[in-house]
View 1 (tube, rainbow, N blue to C red):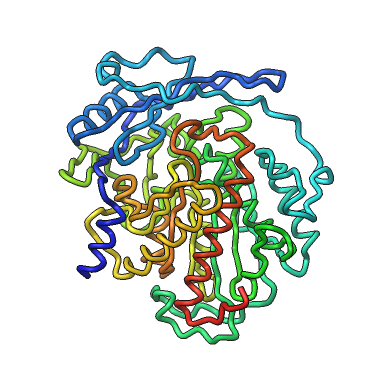
View 2 (tube, rainbow, N blue to C red):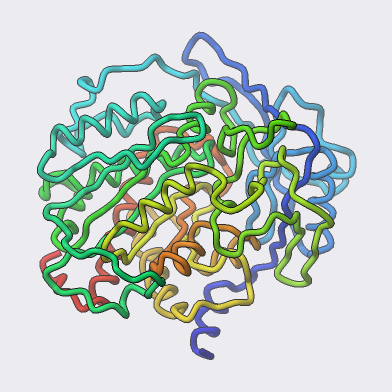
Length: 471
């Protein structure tokens, strides 16, 4: 265990960040305007606050809560706060902390929908699909077209219905049936199970739980395309299908994602009504999972630890729901995962921050018994990712990389679903664009994420004593 702690300490050096769940009293809509042409439209500013102590952090968080500001990101030594042009200037208390203007945030106008026939999805390298972000209707066209082009590899599955009744589509990508059924009622760590060598291993990937993280959904679509592309194409991942079956849910939050196209580009949660007596809408999916879920509002740091005084407000971005699995989207995914045989890997795609994180999220002091293998795989995956375009990726536990957050998906996947290699991957960038990463970066992000996924699956295959020499 001492070696594990040393490895974690090495990967998590200089982590000073503390965090809180902002508690607000009124639902805050960012009022993103639209424009009829295709010129970029200025919508707001992104401010960075340097954090050199837990006291400074708490001061910033208190002001964020008081003024109902939009906290975009918490890094190792900083916080990023977004202010829309429609809002007043930063409060005087925050201005006294002398933030730096990180970016002027602008959005391209939404282009009219196009038919999938113009994308030519037969080629990963030559298609234009991965040059743009896409609304939900186009994503569903992509999913259906991939299944039509590769019927021997791809099957579509409806995971369930969202809070507003939309289908949650997934792609099951396999070159052969996985024959084992999960029989254990209790979670068993994946590499401790005896899985016959003729049976496939399984890996689950999900796109953006948080609606505004468009690059996460786009990256999941790129990975799906890479898995079914011809082996001769650059960044093809089809060789992985010799050992793994993949289950990909590109849009786990379809209601929220659609809302970011129709009304509010920076919407975060789902869109379900949380109470008949409240005007507040939506649950933070990534705080609604059933392991160490909490309804209490907490101000938590690595040290010291602070606690709030009450329930998280339903209008907050971070509202975890009245109970775990209250969000139908979360419940649907959990039910799907429970039926997948030989499940050994899970990847939650997110943005932004360039971090590959392992459990736990609920605690910075608790260390998983599999931490050494998790960290070793994560370090290798991050290094491999950096070799594609030089992107620096931080590794460590999710709590140490960000903050304490109970009810997180990777904690549930690890402890309840028994998936040893469960990770959250925060994609580009580190704040230059934040959630508005330009579409020209979709393909590079997809390519470097493909390299990371290939390394991670090879590592797991080796640990599972599979012959991956042909991969």
